[in-house]
Amino acid sequence: MRFYDEYILPHVINCACGLNTVCKQREKVVPQASGRVLEVGIGSALNLPYYQRSEVEFIWGLEPSAGMRAKAQKNLDAADVAVKWLDLPGESIPLANDSADTVLLTYTLCTIPDWQAALAEMRRVLKPDGKLLFCEHGLAPSEKVQRWQQRITPFWKKIAGGCHLDRNIPALLQAAGFRMETLEAGYIKGPRIAAFNYWGRAV
Image (cartoon, rainbow, N blue to C red):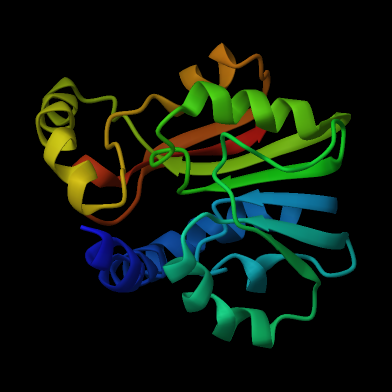
């Protein structure tokens, strides 16, 4: 699976996460980022066009996949904001306590194996007056869709970079000690098993 994960999967993820309906979701949260930003799972850097340059000092881009980092180069070349790569997973963020003004999560929390450790790390590096911005797909409200999500996830995560279709994103954030300031949810265009989105701001 190593060849698939490093050379094929990055193209699949870039295409899926670059769909117009997904980019419209990014546009709802990314412009709220400010100061020193930690983007967890920056992937192919699809969020870069949506940052407000006047509000952002620089971005730490956390991305463990070499294939995704290579895929990001085109977007990085077009960006006019400084990005410093951190090639480690979310469970091991190489930053000091209280480093980031903003932590940004877009379509990332579904893939992190140890989400508890990763969210604890995000809380550690986030300044006391900082904010966590998120836009994620996850557990749908429909019991019928939930059953399909739970059936498919064991197979899905093997071919989709560890993606879990059935994670309750607000519940995970709250379990990690974050408090919701804003939370919206709803289906976007696409298969219902992967189309229910949560987005908002937590502190």
